[in-house]
Image (cartoon, rainbow, N blue to C red; front, side, top):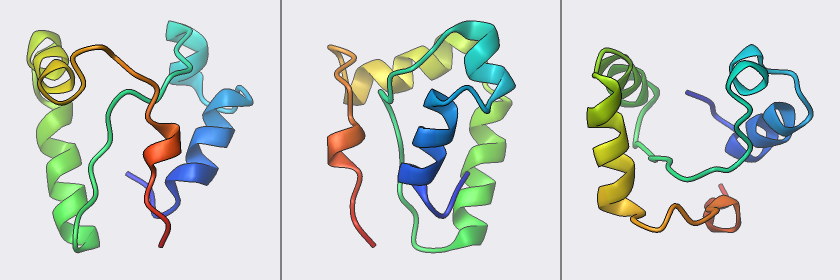
Length: 76
Protein backbone atom coordinates (compact mmCIF):
# COMPACT_ATOMS: atom_id res chain seq x y z
CA UNK A 1 0.00 0.00 0.00
CA UNK A 2 1.28 3.44 -0.87
CA UNK A 3 0.04 6.98 -1.22
CA UNK A 4 2.34 7.55 -4.21
CA UNK A 5 2.29 4.62 -6.64
CA UNK A 6 4.59 6.33 -9.16
CA UNK A 7 7.27 6.85 -6.50
CA UNK A 8 6.90 3.28 -5.24
CA UNK A 9 7.21 1.90 -8.75
CA UNK A 10 10.43 3.87 -9.29
CA UNK A 11 11.80 2.54 -5.98
CA UNK A 12 11.00 -1.04 -6.96
CA UNK A 13 12.59 -0.63 -10.36
CA UNK A 14 15.70 0.92 -8.81
CA UNK A 15 16.16 -2.23 -6.71
CA UNK A 16 15.12 -0.76 -3.36
CA UNK A 17 12.71 -3.62 -2.70
CA UNK A 18 13.74 -7.03 -1.41
CA UNK A 19 10.62 -8.54 -2.98
CA UNK A 20 11.38 -7.33 -6.50
CA UNK A 21 15.02 -8.35 -6.14
CA UNK A 22 14.14 -11.81 -4.85
CA UNK A 23 11.49 -12.57 -7.48
CA UNK A 24 12.96 -10.51 -10.36
CA UNK A 25 9.73 -8.65 -11.11
CA UNK A 26 9.56 -5.27 -12.79
CA UNK A 27 6.15 -4.88 -14.42
CA UNK A 28 3.14 -3.25 -12.83
CA UNK A 29 0.30 -5.56 -13.88
CA UNK A 30 -2.27 -4.81 -11.16
CA UNK A 31 -3.19 -2.00 -8.79
CA UNK A 32 -6.26 -0.73 -7.00
CA UNK A 33 -7.26 2.71 -5.80
CA UNK A 34 -9.37 3.31 -2.70
CA UNK A 35 -11.26 6.24 -1.22
CA UNK A 36 -9.54 6.02 2.15
CA UNK A 37 -6.31 4.84 3.72
CA UNK A 38 -8.22 2.47 6.00
CA UNK A 39 -9.99 0.81 3.06
CA UNK A 40 -6.68 0.39 1.23
CA UNK A 41 -5.01 -1.14 4.29
CA UNK A 42 -7.88 -3.57 4.82
CA UNK A 43 -7.79 -4.65 1.17
CA UNK A 44 -4.02 -5.14 1.27
CA UNK A 45 -4.26 -7.31 4.39
CA UNK A 46 -6.99 -9.38 2.76
CA UNK A 47 -5.04 -9.98 -0.45
CA UNK A 48 -1.82 -10.78 1.44
CA UNK A 49 -3.60 -13.72 3.07
CA UNK A 50 -4.84 -15.15 -0.22
CA UNK A 51 -3.29 -18.17 -1.89
CA UNK A 52 -1.03 -17.48 -4.87
CA UNK A 53 -3.53 -18.87 -7.38
CA UNK A 54 -6.24 -16.50 -6.10
CA UNK A 55 -3.88 -13.54 -6.60
CA UNK A 56 -3.08 -14.68 -10.14
CA UNK A 57 -6.81 -15.05 -10.86
CA UNK A 58 -7.38 -11.49 -9.60
CA UNK A 59 -4.69 -10.14 -11.95
CA UNK A 60 -5.92 -12.16 -14.92
CA UNK A 61 -9.54 -11.09 -14.37
CA UNK A 62 -8.58 -7.42 -14.81
CA UNK A 63 -5.49 -7.72 -16.98
CA UNK A 64 -5.60 -11.06 -18.88
CA UNK A 65 -2.64 -10.18 -21.11
CA UNK A 66 -0.48 -8.97 -18.21
CA UNK A 67 0.02 -5.56 -19.84
CA UNK A 68 2.32 -3.02 -18.19
CA UNK A 69 -0.03 -0.58 -16.39
CA UNK A 70 2.33 2.16 -15.20
CA UNK A 71 0.98 4.60 -17.81
CA UNK A 72 -2.51 4.12 -16.34
CA UNK A 73 -1.65 5.26 -12.82
CA UNK A 74 -4.09 8.09 -12.02
CA UNK A 75 -2.73 11.49 -11.06
CA UNK A 76 -3.82 12.81 -7.69
